[in-house]
Amino acid sequence: MAESVHPLKLVSLLLQYPTEELRAAALEVAGLELRPARGRQAEELRRFCEWYARTPAGELQRLYVDAFDFSKQCSLHLTYHVHGDRRQRGMALLRLKGAYRAAGFEPPGTELPDFLPLICEFAALAPTPAGTGLLEEHRVAIELVRAGLGREGSPYAPLLDVVIASLGRLSAAKLARVRRLAAEGPPYEEVGLEPFAPPEVMPVDDPAAGQPLVGGGEAR
Image (cartoon, rainbow, N blue to C red; front, side, top):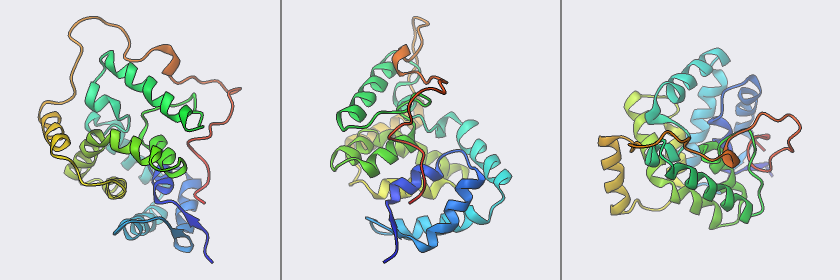
């Protein structure tokens, strides 16, 4: 029987900055069973992995930076899309850290807890409904990133389709919010110059920190 990998675990790896190691992992997907997969999730992922594995690492890195670093509309830090850099974003980040810990996972100290690859890995590893519930909680932001990648014709757009396929139907209220934020952009803080997140949720470059239970790792 073929080894299996959760589609969202694979997405969490492919949405990180490309490396030769990730290209090698993408080559192995052909021999893996993707489950549980809904609808066209497995087909979309296999097609993407074929493209990813045959594209030179330098080109992948350029496309990644173009998609996610040069456009705030496609930022993978999800709370930015609904809170901007207001103080409310700091509270949202703290709630995310609490959700990880409540499910028995320690978020890494090198990345903000709203990083989409991190949430996707949590969704793949955490018991239902905690994992997918966290994705659904950030559905509006995910839809905005998906729409932005689609408008730009980014090759990374299918990965957001895979994430959305793991969720239920988009509610009318969330659809309305997506449309409003797409038209107006994220809110901004009109007064005060405080940082958007308190120190306890900011990433730290501490080589002595323990390895996270969420984020990174092999594809299988």
